[in-house]
Amino acid sequence: MEQFVVKGGSPLNGSVSIGGAKNAALGILAAAIMSDETVTIENVPNVRDTRVLLQAIQGIGAKVKYLDNNTVEINGSTINDVVVDYDYIKKIRASYYLLGALLGKKHESNVALPGGCNIGSRPIDQHLKGFRALGAKDDIDKGMVHVKAEHLVGAHIYFDVVTVGATINLMMAACMAEGSTILENAAKEPHVVDVANFLNAMGANIKGAGTDVIRIKGVESLHGCTYSIIPDQIEAGTFMMAAATTHGDITVCDVIPKHLESISAKLLEMGCTIIEGDDSVRVIATDRTLKATNVKTLPYPGFPTDMQPQMAIALAVAEGNSMVTESIFENRFKYVDELARMGAKIKVEGNTAYIEGIEKFSGADVSAPDLRAGAALVVAALSADGFSVIDDIEYIQRGYESFEKKLTSLGGNIEKVDNERDLQKFKLKIG
Image (tube, rainbow, N blue to C red; front, side, top):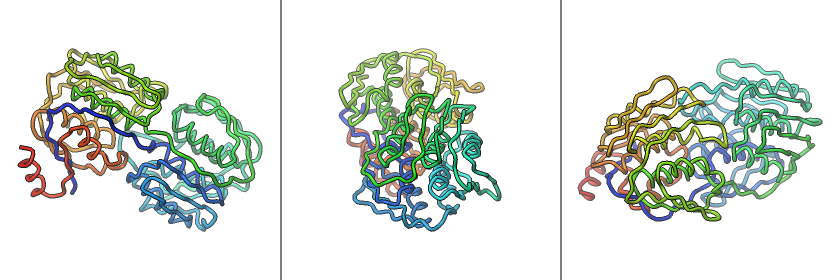
């Protein structure tokens, strides 16, 4: 089983290039099958989640071809099945995007109920409510979601809660429905905007993405295009927090600074220096003590739930007492027990973590409970005294491409190992 072994204590310095947004890529790859022409997608993060989704897309008959490590060509004209195999899909949450894509294209889809990280309840009731409004009937049987429509007709849909997944799914289904659709209380996240821009590049007519009201006029067909995915705000934020936690100086490159404003604002409150460029953000935390602050996760443009564990790691070594309130997912503090092994003083009550800052983490053996918490534990290990071993790193590999290589390029002592001999070799080498 693969592990990360880390020798902490060195500040991370230098520049790092950020890849394409995983959450945008999953929506865009699913949407690509809606055209019968070839679609070329650039800046695709080559991570486990995208590879699994592409396998599932191939499994229903679409043509998928990697032009290079981060460029994929997809042609949906050869799709011959609307049943998405459970073995692929139980591994990732975003499998449900194939419901909207296939419903829009074929007026029918059968997809296994999705898996992914166990960070709390993520129901698909808002997706199904929206599909019904467009004229589809749905049924859940033996772990499969089945949606079917004689024909799709535009509708006025109000989401009871702000939901990224349902917003993207309904955009896909509605863009090939008859007439107009209005989505109210829609999610405003950058990856929602990116999927809308991609669909428009294929000939859809979607206006208002990035606001809470999205208006869609149905079209008869979608055509091919070439499209480049936006940078990943969560990968960028993780490296920004790594600069703060290790008292380093990192420039994250190839980013959209506006997408990172809520993260930059909190780092400023904590005493870091932030320098924004046109497509870069530099975080300087050398020779300074981090200050405590309070954070509450909220839908975009609020502080992202996917950055909550990384933020808590930084606050755990800040001076004073902090509070982190999680308002999106109820099961997102599972990393706290692991962090306690490294000396952190965190008490969780309900949806709030109360953090008493310590001077430094101590190296320990820990397990990644999910994707973002796993990355956060790696950051904690890089700032800790001594060696740490992180287990269950397949979670981390779901969403971070070449994570250990990028950290090594910044001066981090980290290596991926898969046996005890290599682990001991690393410890002897680093000393």
